[in-house]
Image 1 (spheres, rainbow, N blue to C red):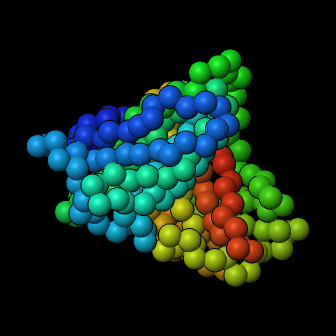
Image 2 (cartoon, protein in one colour):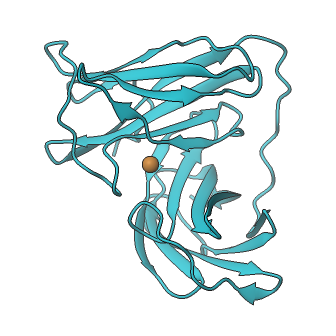
Length: 231
Ligand SMILES: [Cu+2]
């Protein structure tokens, strides 16, 4: 199993992005195209989680995560206003599906300047964001096997009621491997009142950063976890 997101070109499709250099904190119109084997821009995409293109960005030290949904123009270019907040190298992931085949291609973007490196936090089962506490029950996840991940969301020690649908489920999860930013496609498998469940297969041992997005009180929140996968 080849991890996703490590290549700018795979399975006959090539990701083109621009601009590739940004000024820190300044909004630019970012564009991307998916080219087929003949170099033509693909325009016919399948819907996945309610959208036809998911664009994720993260700095290579796994901070400043963004998840955006660009708009498709008539010439096959997807565009979205984009701000990269701090200097460093960022990975842009285009996650899409064509003809029933789902793919994730990746390209690097650059923000010149002095970069302040953020080290990956130690593995933890609790994350706090915007006054919410999110608890992760991952059991003892091992490489190559299917792992069940359950997130429980509370606010002031009470289960959050009425989580709002987001991208066709009650939450959206992306996992990236520390070291090379391999991108894991994670599938929601269910939800109860304040719990959201996913299944994932982690391709190798090591550390992964998880980005869980859920919607509540009209806003999308992102909770992050470091997860260690055993051999
Ligand atoms: Cu998306």
